[in-house]
Image (cartoon, rainbow, N blue to C red; front, side, top):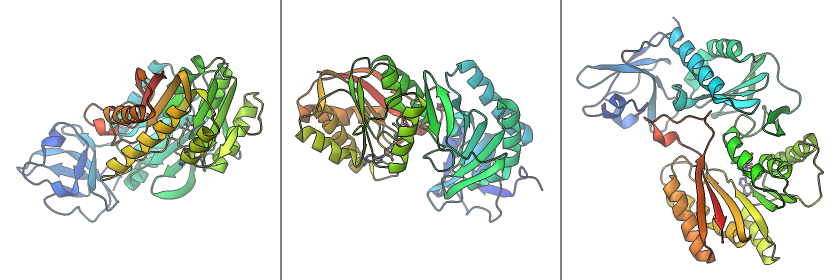
Length: 389
Ligand SMILES: C[S@@+](CC[C@H](N)C(=O)[O-])C[C@H]1O[C@@H](n2cnc3c(N)ncnc32)[C@H](O)[C@@H]1O
């Protein structure tokens, strides 16, 4: 039996096939007429009236998501289907002319592979699985992706399990150095966050680089200092990095060295960004630029109100620290928060701070993170580039 052999059938309850007919790839447990088959593998999905709708991969989590559709009728689910998806994703990236050695090859729903991400870091390729059943296809995925990209080493990370596994080649002994625009970034592929770097922010780092000459920048939620090196190489005078992870900050310092930048004492603050901001404001510190790139404050249903108050608070702190005429890049990577909601949180913060904020651009992830029009919920990163008076 191959990984493409269907292990059973799933029937939907009456009226629950609308979303699939609109090619939305998620099926919730409440839509199923009967529980999922016990065997682990792809299943054929039928409407209550017996129409074949396509093939789904059952979710192994106990959450509300039951299935992720990997193809819609009449497309077959077979090795050539996956091969073509990878080739399509590769061809698209080639056309995008991404200015980086690190880029996203597969962006889950946006590339027709829901629950699966693959990032390229030079000669390394890192798969990140959100759904264990993708492990059935890993060897095939690795072989095809290696032949397309020229990667020599393939690593596997999972959102549902700690650690990293080597699929092909070797684990890097040190952080992998990749060139992006004018700078180098160091990626800890084995233990860093996500697959190593936040590749979705590449174009926003470039924006900061181009607009930071002569400025004093506050880099909140700095991780490994990507925005900081972009700003410094763009002519910023100083950058203060604030980050809760000591490991990330240590790599940020190495990243400075890799870019020939001096590592100055006091420019890497380990701590809680909210507390640090209040302390900086109490000391009367002021900045020309503030980057706010927090972790997702809304991770699941029911967290929206609390999460939005987090966005409001962090932006209030940022506004208090900005000089008149300063610039703000404020981000949310919560999929459940829309750009309008982020603007609402910023509006509330601006009123509290008594500052006028002008949105120069609504921004998001780079084009190697495509969003399926059929599944807009997967638009994670929203960013607002603002002038603050
Ligand atoms: C979305 S990532 C930032 C990515 C970074 N801007 C980049 O471009 O590489 C969020 C970061 O915030 C850090 N973090 C989480 N909670 C924090 C807090 N309360 N204060 C400071 N940093 C925090 C995480 O460790 C993570 O590195």
